[in-house]
Image 1: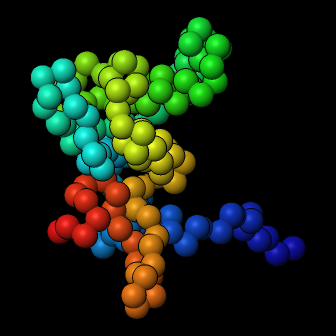
Image 2: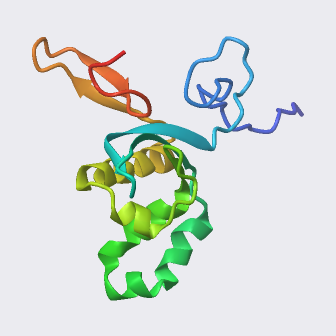
Length: 152
């Protein structure tokens, strides 16, 4: 009787590649847990200083569960994103004590940016966005993490 090797699951085509890119070494890159960003408008502190850059870390399950027990969220579900973003943003400019009050004082466009940034790094695992040039219709990816669109 001829014996056959037990069936093995086929290897994923990208299993040997590092997360988020094609590697030449064949080794995985370490897990990236913090991502820098640049706010479209910037946070204006009490002294009138505008802070543009910041850091957001990956969210944990606790980060998504704890805000659900917050009375402000129970009263107004729209407040969930404010509490959640305040938990995962670790720095904006020179401010490293980020709390819901800081996030409440952001311009609406900056809050929308951070909500999208959160979704990208936590659900999609990267900070790139696919875009199409309005002039030539060429498709390419831009990194939303650093710099403003149109700047190098």
